Length: 157
Image 1 (cartoon, helix red, strand yellow):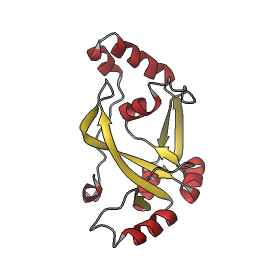
Image 2: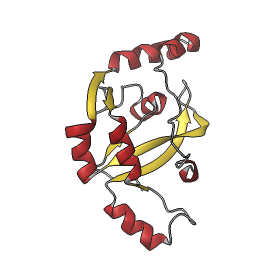
Image 3: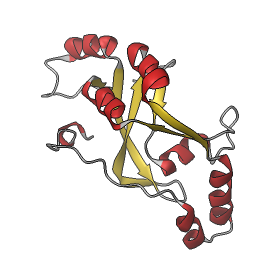
C-alpha cells in the first residue's frame, strides 16, 4: 500500500537511483541526500506500521488497517539494487512519513541537505560506459543499520 502525500526516507543510494532513474526521471531531476538525526530516524521506526498486512504480526487485517491509518510513519522493504539497478536478494528499508512525522522531519530531524545530482550523473556515466569498478568507487558508503535487539528482523519481507 503506497500512499500519495507521504514523505519517503530511502536510506539506500542505489535504491534511490532506481526510483529516480539516476536523476533523469521527469520531476525527479534533482537528487538530494538528507541527513537526519539518529533519534529522529529511531522515532520514525518506533512509530511505524508495516505498510502491508503480515499474519502473526497483526491481529487481523482490520486491526492492521486501523493501525496503518493512525501511524505517523509506514515501513516497507523493497529489493536492494545493484549498479545496473537490478534487484538483489536482500531488501532495503523505506519509511513513509505523514502528519506529525513529516513536521518533525522538516523542523527537528533534518541536519543537512546535500545536492548529490552531479554525483548520481557521474556514477551513471561510468555505468553506461561499462566501468562498474569506477562507478563503485564513487558510491556512498552504506552499512546495515544497527539495532539494539534485532527488532527489525521479524518485519523483513
